[in-house]
Image 1 (tube, rainbow, N blue to C red):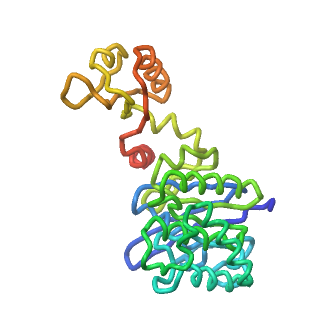
Image 2 (cartoon, helix red, strand yellow):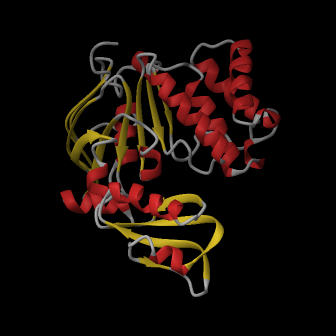
Image 3 (cartoon, rainbow, N blue to C red):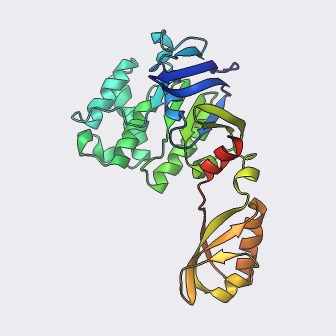
Length: 304
């Protein structure tokens, strides 16, 4: 696929008096396209317009050169993982996947072999004959992801694909997305989590209030988001306050003579390296680092 699989021009989508998407123009690139934004930014509405579930109020959406809300054939080459699972609660996992696989002209044997292989990777094959209504949110998410990739679509639309998942399953899905994009497929992946963005080297579009406010890459955005920010560092063993003071960084802790975590204030992403070097020099054992500011909102605010 050498041309943009998804081309959106001057897209408006209105629900009554509410404008969900406001003059969106977008051309996908092969591989992974991440769309980042806070709640209410219009991310899910955008995916539904690309899928052909919502017809634009004005403007145009073309997928593989066709209008998805008019062309049934092109929709066979698209698949979507939505934010509401899109599964039938009182059918079993097997019956759900059979139903959706048959819509894509897959035989029962193809559906069962492919879906069991995927579910096994996600640690959910044991639920194959269970009704969806009996499953946890995380297991439903695994089944919904399996459904979305059964037909190996040319355009894969993902709405928060790792929501409610354990760390192992989340990592498998991220690896799948990267590998899938390398097969000359197009993936549109919406999220409000910066942690997700940081795991990809890809194109990044930022949405706020229904508008694209920035079109960049996952690496280029860090100079903005980790500026005058803070990180929470968790320690494998409690450390003394004296060790924290030796770093030279301003910090906050819970009351006590020793601490298992501390909030440090930083001026940029390079400070994270300097901070960790100082902590290690002072024999602190770092278990994890979390960015604790509402970073998506910070990005949006700077460009609003």
